[in-house]
Length: 323
Image (cartoon, rainbow, N blue to C red; front, top):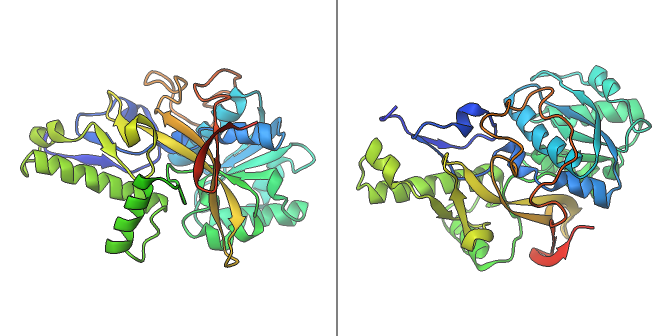
């Protein structure tokens, strides 16, 4: 364990990450953290009170779904149905039937990735008719990893759970990051979750190796930064901060799919939640059961950001809160 070194880049959450070995550092949020605020958007902006959710039946699906469920239920929403298609499903018709359709709920949350994102929405459309973007919210798979070209054109106006990136954020720090990316990696989209999160992980490792003078093992572990100035960080002086388990406390941005001037469709920031930690404001403790099919339970409670989710307009974080 003293020779192996891990920079976390996954989005899953489980006790092995919350009670982490000394060689694990993660400078971005997990799948649950990324969705902080999305449930409040559904409740306040769309008027959802009862919702169904479909999520891939594995660790990341459960974790991403956990953030959505916890946030929506905390504000007063109810999850009436949870549906779990296995990975590599190609025919989603039986699973969309389990959701109950638009007559049974105010809306549906989607946590289905890869080719399944488009396939599951197509099956829903075949079962219940044309998609209404105000009735569907997706996690990051609605907007990234190629979905911007396949799914997004059908879902203009739909809200999307973020992934810690702030596409179009107008701050000096964000502009600097985008400029660096354009110089060294001109073909890579700076705000893509993998590009941004791998960039930050590599940047942290470079800093650690510089301080340790190239030494690995315990020397590198001691040298790794406890804070990291990243492109889309605003709170904490513009830095991601690691908690006592070396997990990121980081800002989160919730998105909406919009049509751009060139006719393309992509994510635009609409909400900002500062400094979300991996416990999700105390809901997911190291002693809690990990996210799964029945975890978390749907409970109304108070999160640190509830009622304080800030509006983002044209890349600027305003003083207004979501109402």
